[in-house]
Length: 490
Image 1 (tube, rainbow, N blue to C red):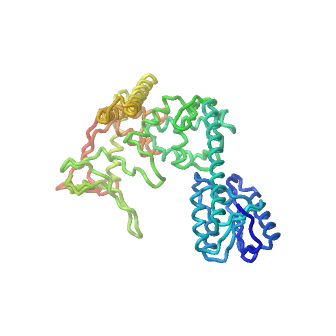
Image 2 (cartoon, helix red, strand yellow):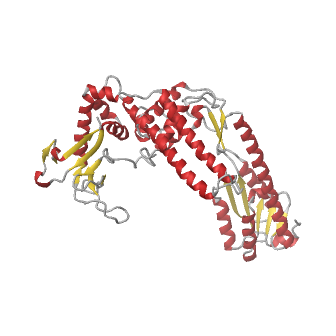
Image 3 (cartoon, rainbow, N blue to C red):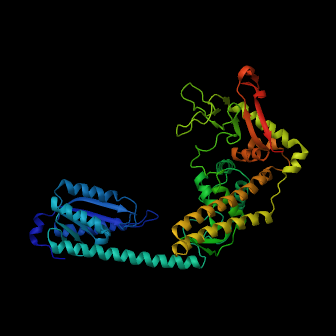
């Protein structure tokens, strides 16, 4: 650190840089105050200001991921030449990362830049080793201070977590401001969503229904698929405070039972229920997984075409000839329009449920004791898998023993999760109101729920080749229902 010489005034084209780390409401005047202070300093020194740059609500620490747009513009101006010094209120406004300072030091070797100046009267001459070392020390001090602050904040947050206290932030859905008192109107929505998802409905269909009914989020906006799925899976709703992978008893009351959350988690992780990524992706076909080619026995897949210009789109099922690896897996000769095929199977499913014997056989059998037992088994298997990792880390198991045991344990976890998901499928009928038939509920239900109900009674749908039978008019389609065979479970 050194005083700048009088001759520096002859080479004093200056850029001002100001930065504020956090401005959550975008209302702070701090950046403008920094700029005004720098302008006053430059005026006192008779330094011409050739650029003013400011980044608001941007951290300069190594933990920040936001780009400093104005800082980057300032560097671009310096690279063009004619800038002799950078004026700031204090070094942390400019840098808290040593690697960025080193970039600027290298820039000083190839441009007109010579010095970093603070309004506190501290000058860092980047053309001398003393000035460079002083600048590096200043940034190192700033980095140490950030680390101390971060450690202090983490200790405070962890202490609050252990006490079950809320971490703060926006109002959590289902609770009043402060995150402790339940807002019953929203709690009912959480319970409804949990029940519907466990019963087989997709998040996509639930979101569509909530928005159609005008049920808003905590901020008054419409629900999004990823927003609702993230919300209902929070452990907050079973009275748990999460922090860095640890669970602590929460200070607020639960909205859901632990068994409900475990059922949702099992369904989320099951192969039969993948989380949708956007409103435009997800299942389009009712019978995927049920339908097979009558010519070769290969499972048929949905294979449609999107509309393009004047060309209409369509959905159909087809027998695949090759898989994605180029291996022959089927005959590739059987195709069928999805609309009449799904209508035929749907009406057949309704007819089966109209039979009183079927209704008795398939009445929801799930009770809390069975669910609780399935959840406990699932949790026991998960804990055993976790224990294997600990045993390997503490040398109780060799690597070969760990790999072998882990494969067995993961298989057991999958079996337990599948068993729990199967119980949930049995409960799909619980979504049908008492005053509605299956066919009436079918009209307003989502595709995932329809698949859950279909899975209860349909084992297999076989599509025979058209052959000599051909197609004829059926419900406005060119279709032959006699070529479709349904194998029932009941």
